[in-house]
Length: 95
Image (cartoon, rainbow, N blue to C red):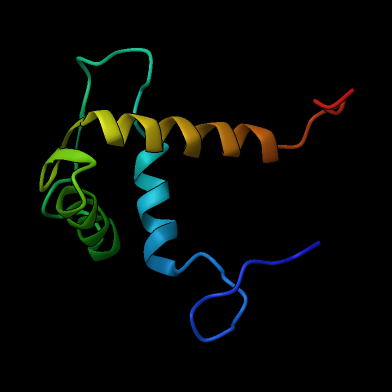
């Protein structure tokens, strides 16, 4: 198995910032495009910064959350699918 490397030749790993962004993305309800989220000003700094980065990247419509953009929806779908795939199961999904 080949592990992807970054520009410096180090093994790629999720950063704390990426993990915080993924944590926000998995909170979105993908069953409805009419339901967003709002990260309030009294939330922890990590969540506030993560939502701002998602906004800066064009994944959400507001700097405090809002709705997913088309790109954000794809990212949230992938994040939520990965979470389900990695969850413990009684029976393997591959069988």
